[in-house]
Length: 278
Image (tube, rainbow, N blue to C red; front, side, top):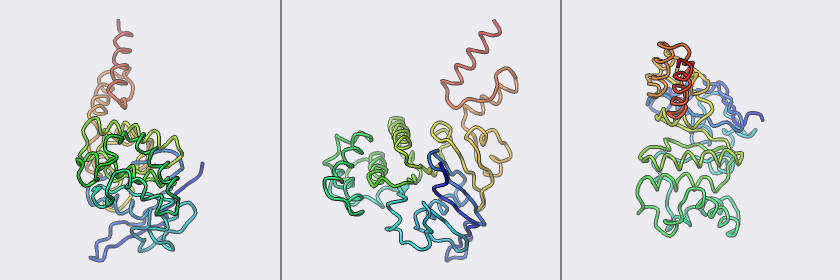
């Protein structure tokens, strides 16, 4: 698999004079789930909005599926990149959840039968059967988030950008999003996730891009990033607790090895250590 998105020497300055991106270069491969992390003002959301043409580079070039985004309108890029907003209210407008899920495919030119097929697939994947006839504006915020993601999924873009998908979600909602991500990945859709949820990053993504002050300062796997103290300090981020525990145990007991990605994995590691010492 090759690159589905390339960002080349991209700068972006807002009309108020704030430069949000500074000579950013990034290649996003087809397949792996990518998270872009950093504090507010780091440039991660600005970069994400470059991918579907919501913003155009002040300087540099963004290419998606071989298409220069500078030459296309956002609606023309919708078949290639779908963007699920942090606040789902910005994208939900139909009378029912079912109609909301059909709207995207219909806007892309598909007939009603195909739009309904895609909507049914999304309803099953995101477990929305119980709310399919409800007005999106009337359902609780966590469900609005799920419907927002599902409405992008039905357009079957090559890339899906999810902006803070776990915000406002309880444990069940996060679990549903994690399961959906696995299914979407298996379907060949590349996922780019903007998030402050470091535990979610650790458990759910393959690769991480860290941003600070409008620049990419590090790329790697979640564990590679989270054990890099310097990178985390520059980005003003804290690794998940399970990583902090694993790092400390490794310092105390070298046989422990590196930190784990989940509590269950850490328990297995500790049990293995105890068994060896007995």
